[in-house]
Image 1 (cartoon, rainbow, N blue to C red):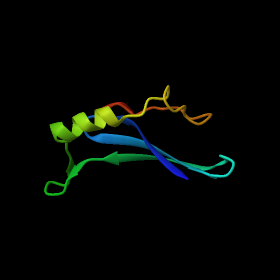
Image 2 (image 1 turned 90 degrees about the vertical axis):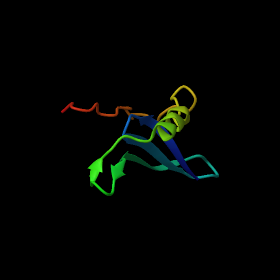
Image 3 (image 1 turned 60 degrees about the vertical axis):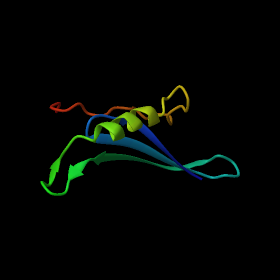
Image 4 (image 1 turned 45 degrees about the horizontal axis):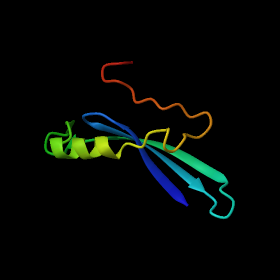
Length: 83
């Protein structure tokens, strides 16, 4: 079974965690973290999400209290300007 969770979002980025588990015993076979960037294809630059989409994404974020993160996973979306 594949489970995809939106862990964090800001004005132009999404951080998702995907987990692949065996349905019969719940064995965690694989994990993948994906960072996506919203890009304006006309300017070829990162751009903020439209307000309605940003609000929907904020409501969609799955908190670790609802679904714990895998052992050893540290949730962190780099802040803009941080290196």
